Length: 199
Image: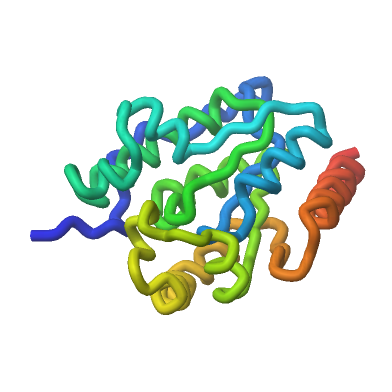
């Protein structure tokens, strides 16, 4: 029996409600090729903050690459590791956090992101067209869910994920025809408006 990759992993509990607890300034979500890593680094540089990525955290913790985890243990095991990485980062990282493309799909992860954004957090959905995403990614053999037919699989992936990305995000930006700098400008401007609303 194949495990449902969208099923809720075993939860680690809710996020702490104490506002003094460390949390990211911005969390970036979106599909492969949307520019999450590039925008995260540029935004972190602009704000003078550290950048963190849950995929990197999973690989570091497992001592293996994500394709190897998929091939050896299956997607369900990877998703559980991803949830642990998200939970930890939301409690310990005070900079810019980018998530793996499938991280928002699990119901528990959606709850974590909702709790985060209900405080002073901002989740940004970086959107992108299929052609631009595939061009940016180049060789997709290291991406287990895209493989040898990247455009077709990307379209199917987004049909499955778009509603969730839009649900969890407080800001939606299409990166297809915008520079990294303009995307960062838009995020910084939105952060500024949130700060004003809180005063």
